[in-house]
Structure formats: C-alpha cells, structure tokens
Length: 182
Length: 235
Image (cartoon, rainbow over all chains, first blue to last red; front, side):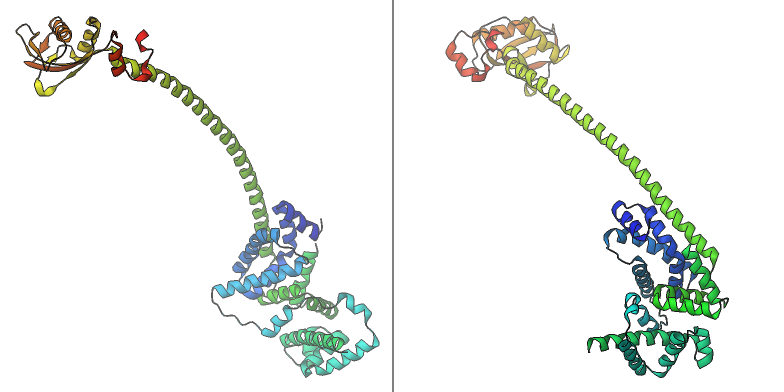
C-alpha cells in the first residue's frame, strides 16, 4: 500500500498497524525536527511518540492531502506548544521560520518558463538585498553548496542559508506580483 | 528504505563527508522540503545522527502498535464475555419474574380463602389484661384451639366479655358476663371455660368472639356479612 492507501485504510478501519507503517518512515526526520525545537534527546523521543498518539485520534477525522507536509507542520506546532507550556524561551530565528511556513513552490510551473519570465526574474533579482542577491546567484546559477558560498563571500554558514531561503521567497512573491500586475 | 537513505545523507552532510555536488543537491532538496530542512537543522544541533536513539524509537513504536492490537483483542474477548453475561442476566431476570408472578398469584388465591372465611368461622379470644393476670395452662393458642374444637353450634354469634376468678381446682369460677349478651352465649361460655384447661393466676378477663355458624335470620345475616362474602355459608 502506498501512503494514500495506508491513510485511507487507517481512516476507515482504525487499524493501528497501518498507522505505524505510515508513520515509521518519518520518525527519523521527525526526531530531527523535534530536536531542533526541544533540544533534548529524551524529550524529542517522547515528542515523536506523543505525536503518534495524537495522530491516532486526528487521522481518523481529518482529510489530509499531503501527509508529509501536514505531518511536518503538525509536529512543529506540537513542539512549539511544548515550549510554550514550560514557558521556556528559545531563540528562534524569525527568518528561518518564515521560510518554513511556505510550502512547495514550483514543480509544474517550472516547465513553462518563457523569455518574458526570465526578464521578470532578472528584474526581481534587483529588488533583493546584496546578501540575498549574491547567495541566490551563487546557489542557483552556479550551483555551489552553502559551504562554498560561505567561503567565497565570507558570510557565516547560517547567514548563507537564510539568505538563500529568504531570497527565494522574496523572488517568488515578486514574480507573482508582476504576473498579476501585467 | 528511502528513510535510511535520507538519514545517512544527513549524517554525511553534517560530518562533511559529501562532495560539493552532493551537498548542493541536498541543500536544494531541503529548500523545496522544509521538513527535510528542519530535520537537518535538528541533527546539526545534536551534532550528528544517533542510530541507537532511532532504533529505540522504532522499537517504541512497534511496542505501541502491538500493545494496541493486544488491547483490542482483550477488549474483544471482554465484549464477548459481557454479551454472555448479559444474556445470562436477562434469563435470570425473566426466571425471577416468572417465579414471582406464579408465587404472587398463588398467594392471592389463598388470601381470599383465609381472610374472608376464618374470622367468621372460628372462635377468637382476646385476653384483656386490665382485668386480670390469668393465663390458661398450655398457652393461649392451645386454648383457642380447644374452644374451636369444643364449640357447640348455638346459632348465635357475637362478642362477649367475661370476668372470672380462678378457683381452687384451677378452673375459672364466678364467671360473669359484662353487659347483657344473649343468654345462650353466656351459657356456652361458662360451659367451655368450666370444661377446659386449667388456669394459672388469680383473675381473668376475656373477650370472646363467637362465629356465626348458621344464619337463621336473613335480616341479621345481611347486617353482619359483607356483601362480597357470599359462598362462605356453604363451607
């Protein structure tokens, strides 16, 4: 059974082993996500199990199209709730989290780019700040990895990462605005 | 498994074991996949992938799934038992109800017989304690029984209150009726008391109710008998 079938099977029968099969492949990723927020190995493991417990209820009632991204958002919210509960203040980079709230950008659209779109993209590139422009260009056009970009520009690795993430988001917003405004 | 593949890529990425092209590839994927990006961030914070933790986690999940399945089986059997128990309970209640109705109906029939006929056909005595301390040897029950056996049909019913003393021979003496009851009733009372059991004590005072065995006067019968008691005459 593929993911969708497992999900449907669980929803109709409540068979928990189907849910286990669905959940198991994501556990290592989930652990990483939980660790990012909770920053404690035991708590992160417990969180992964607790999220599973909640799914036992939730998945029978919710209609879910994209399980992977739903699970990601759900687990992130779960961890943030945990943090809020114990009133622990953590340093979360707002830029990082802005990026995460957006989902897949391109896929099908990518194929139908025309000359006009490239001109538009070039225009949008000019709206980015220096860091973002630099990093996006090096990453997307020259296909360099973060580390190389950091070495080339002298920026911190994390700064490179968020510059690319934010640059990409800004480009997308800019492109959409131009498309609607033509 | 795709999952393990991703995990080892994350591991290699964090520990710098990837070529630049591979790093770029993973970074690009992570840009399209915030889930992956978050996981990479997490493992980087942890300084690497701990396979032992993850296999423990996998075990916990397996145990969790197995437990639920086991519980479900247990619950299933419990339901089965419960159903059997409920059926037995219903049967029991039905049986009880049947028994109850049977018993209740029988009792109702008997009650009709007893309550309507007995007081009218039997002599009853009521010792009036304010008038004396005498009790018949053998007890009141036996005395009442004796009265009923020895009773002659006087054709008169009624209630009489008598006072007497206990003589030297232990039998009632100086028997006197209160008020003005029928002479036959007084004579019958004296006869019964004199020929009955011996008494103990010094003085006695009794209220004796004689039944109406035969009704010669229809007018009288109408007065005394309640209308629903017809048929008693035959017995």
